[in-house]
Image (cartoon, rainbow, N blue to C red; front, side, top):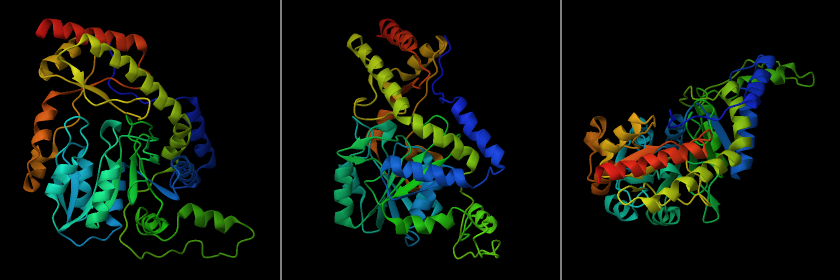
Length: 380
């Protein structure tokens, strides 16, 4: 056995969509990016979306749109990928690390209230692993304190929580299409919002501040009914970034979005198969309160006090593993913003991420499950 931890699901349909971009001889920011944005808005149910080259870029831009005063604070969960905390830092703001709930590893409302002060301007909740943060409580708190909410949806696409799609609870939402996420464009991300004014600001900002897309001006130029002879003219009114998605990535995204519901359902089926093993285990527990009938997860994991021994045991049996994630407040770069998060600082020590992807088979899950059982027999 040699079982991968993550693997994207890609096929001929993606290749054909890329080939179409080749045949058009337009592989940069173009018509396919525009189509992907429209398709994604329709899927999520928001008014406007813009595609970017990563969720990291998306979070940077999403925070920037509010023009917060330098030195203000943004509340972020302690267990997440570094991009969540880099977003405020890129905007000359200070991250405030908020502890997580022990059961679901999402932002603790109690610690959110404790860490808040008058310098806080925004919250960036994360749906860890695909587990929805308690958005109804976060939004209520944000309204009370007049805080903006930038929803980090890097770990999920397509889940509806309490009647609202994740990504639409806050002022603005950001999704990830990195290679191992729920859907992929290789690298890439999407910003979405029902506030069109926010998106209008970010459209030029993701393209160097230029006030019109090259492909749109070019196509307008060759339109025989257009009198726009100054197709080359543009202006720059804002500091911009080279954060745009290109048509090759968007071509993959167009197809992946069509596959997404099916891919989510396959992962949910595999999680249900994993969950059956826990009736045979006493010392290894599920990482999250997995509910695959309602939520879409991009990772599956367990907790074990003998984490490192379990990782080695699985590795020697051809099973790839990971640890997602090390608390940010414990990393060297973030030490100047350290604030205590005792639950996060303890809980992560037991985390083991197990394989989860569309290619994973029921037989492989049974094999992994047997190795979990054999580990308990040997080590406990």
